[in-house]
Image (tube, rainbow, N blue to C red):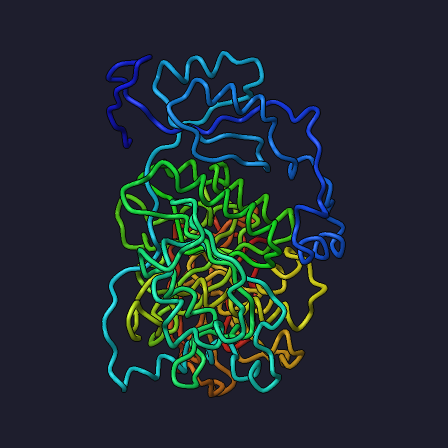
Amino acid sequence: MFCVLIQSSAFSQSIVSSYFVELSDKDGVTFDPLAYFDSKTISRRIMHNIPIDDKTDYPLRSDYVQQVENIVTTHTATSRWFNGIAVVASDEQIMLVRELPFVKSITELTGESSLCSISEKTVSNSQLELLRMQTCRMGGDLYKEADIDGKGVRVAIFDAGFPGVDVHPAFQHLRDGNRILKTWDFVKDRENVYDYNSHGASCLSCIAGMYEGEKIGLATGAEFLLARTEQSREPFSEEVNWLEAAEWADKNGADIISSSLGYTHHRYFREEMNGSSLVARAANMAARKGILVVNAMGNDGEKENWHYVGTPADADSVLSIAGIDPYSDYHINFSSYGPTASGVRKPNVAAYGHAFLAKKKGFGDAFGTSFATPLVSGFAACALQTNPSLSAMELFAEIEASGDLYPYYDYAHGYGVPQADYFLNLKEKASPSFTSTWLDDGLHIIALNNPRQYDYPNSNYMYYQLIDSEDNILEYKVVTIYSDDVITIDPEKHEKAAAITVFYNGFMNTISLKN
């Protein structure tokens, strides 16, 4: 837990911590939604039957806020959605706050976040093939042919800074079109976000960047809201900043939130990854307000003590994104695994966890589910452009259904990589390409057809899973099929299994193991 020593007249040398104080009511507060919301927010809510005059959007009672401020060391943020105040207070001060009759609950904020990216390096010209692959893998060429680029869709990006976005050539088209509509630094409480960590600029490039006429991300025609919510060595405020940014994004007409941030073992236990954190609650509320929230799974897949999904990717209404390796085309080793602690299936879909992108100066490549996430966010903006009437959760479900593994699912890949042909009504129904039979010595696979010749290398991959009678996944693997093959199954898990599901070459087959 992060703490500092302060000197105050009331409490000398008291240890202070950060807290989120939820209040009991908003009695007597008035609200004018037409004056408060962007016209795009109002249109979105009316289209999807979401109230524009909802109590969760009302401001807090100023008398309650003032009474809390009179006690604590400092007041750092407020939340309309959760009727709460983020404060820094000593133990003695927070005890006094607890005694106020209008205080509903108090949650201590501890720990730190992580940006879901890892090492990066400068790329050579030969590695620019990655640039082409990362959009083509999602069917980006089809979107280009159909003139789909996210036009009319508004994307909010939450990150640790956007240095260079105001001058970098990757974003010249956004500046020329005045499509960076608003910015806000929730750390410094000011408009300028064009400083600090370049992670946000790299993520923006994976949604809408350009490199010498080539698309880095698919949504080069979208509009953007840029929010700085993270900073180094300041763990208290980041979840509250995320919540504030979500309310700001909703107010300013966002259709999509793209967040490559995560909170894991630095703050939480594994059993708490169940959608109950403050930031997960904020993400679910954003979805209730009609915004598609896209968030990285995290990069903990290789850690012994924690290789699970972080929060807010554990929220059930968040589209959580895993990473795949561009060269093997299946799970990249560091990408975190599902499910959530409460059994919710995560991830939802996947994209490249190694991407070409803009850096603070120039271009390069980097690794992380941080970059798989904005690649999918750009895809989602294009998908919404094809059908603007889709609600956030309808779009969520359609992106899952567009995955190249769908209806197969596992905890490493989700439903696979989203595909543009689904949204352009070009997807062909898969034909049976194999037979599968369960015999005593294992699962026998007979390939009937030659693998289809994709531009990516998963044509020969077979995915299989063992599931129990309650549809829980007991085991799942990816194997390469070149000819007739026999797959060995863990005997212990076989005894618990009710069925085996096999996905190969676009076709899925399920074999019941129970009479």
